[in-house]
Length: 115
Image (cartoon, rainbow, N blue to C red; front, side, top):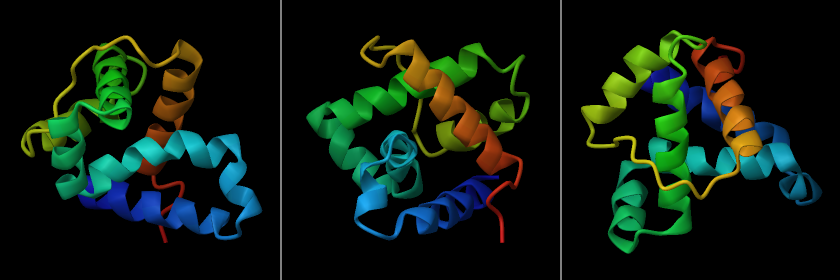
């Protein structure tokens, strides 16, 4: 499931290869997934307690709280926890962003961007 997520994330990013597209909301909200796809970067951001790290943790917490809406999150969160990427609630990410990020993550897990 982790591999599917990461490959789907990178396939999704292909939609934003030109410079103008990188200013789009859909591209910006997906940036948090880089920390999932690149565990080394996750650990670096965690050690800095950066905004990116806190945003990801808020998202993972939101995902955990909404497993009933997105059942695939349960197995996915388990794969992340095995990599020491765990949900922590910081409360810094706006609810509407969390909802959109969760929908995007669900699309990755449902193979919407699988090639």
